Each structure stands twice: as structure tokens, then as C-alpha cells.
Length: 121
Image (tube, rainbow, N blue to C red; front, side):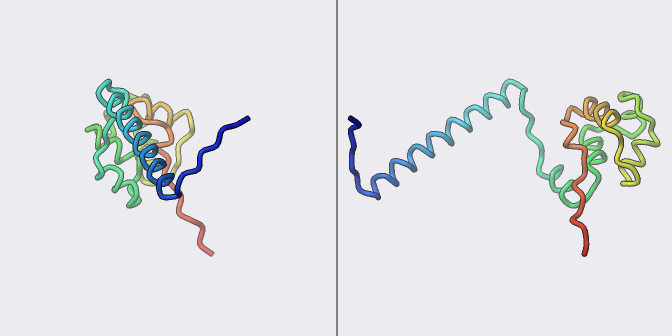
């Protein structure tokens, strides 16, 4: 037989809030540990703001990492013209190309893919 306990709703809400807070603290501690170990990177909001404003993610990450287009081309073995075209939005780049660029920039490949604007009707 299962034992049951009845408590006032306000007490339940208080206990639930305490549990949520405990989970938040544990999550924050995990993130801080990843930052301290070097497994997680803090990104300045200006980087994200520029991407959200429509600037090419490749250009934003390249500039944030302090690389010129020529340096990125040399380090990634991707043709500089391809980098220029991707940054200008004329081309999207193949998965293979984006993977090479992402590796040099130390980002996930998804971080280099620009969000397409919603189709206009």
C-alpha cells in the first residue's frame, strides 16, 4: 500500500520552488566547472548581437578570432574567394567547407550557418 501525505497547496508550491532553485544551482555549478576546465567558452554579447543583426556568422567568428580572410583561408585550406562569397551571402558553402572553417574557428558547424529570413508572402 502506498502512503500518502496531504499538504496545503502553498506548501507544495514552496517545496517545488526550492527544488527548482536546487536544480538551477546545480546547473550553474556544472557550467562554471566547464568554463574553468576550458570545455566551455564565454562569448561576448556583441558577437551574438552582430549575428542576430544579420552579419555573416562566418565574418563575425573570423573577426572575433582575430583572423583575416587570407589567414582563415591558409589555416583551413579553403579558397579565400569561397570565404568572401560565404561572408557576402552569395554562397552557403558545402558541409565539407563549413566543417573545415568551423574547426579553425573552434565553433560548431551550425554556428556558421546563417538563419534564413522567413519567406515573404
